[in-house]
Image 1: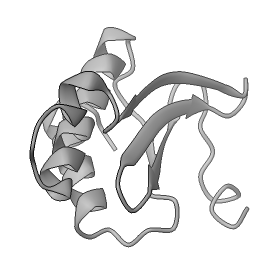
Image 2: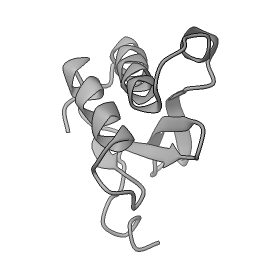
Image 3: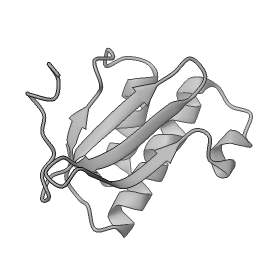
Image 4: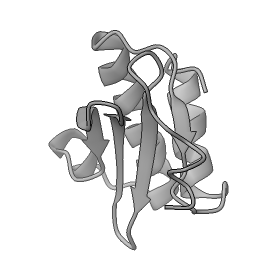
Length: 105
């Protein structure tokens, strides 16, 4: 709740939420006003899980995938919610790949 009161996703600028487990990384773009997930991507998708790469490279692939899905859905700008995780390692890799893919945050 500490994070949610500072970052709120709107229809014009939804929230990019990240969850990191020990094995996988999940990301979704959420419109908090409607309470809906607009697009989502994770490292468990077939295209990403089939590759033998490190977890940091896996996060980079997920960042590129969410950027591709977001631009296809017409989303250009988001609010980045790192979920309390430090901006380091997998979170940083995901964010940089999403920025390279065309998302603005």
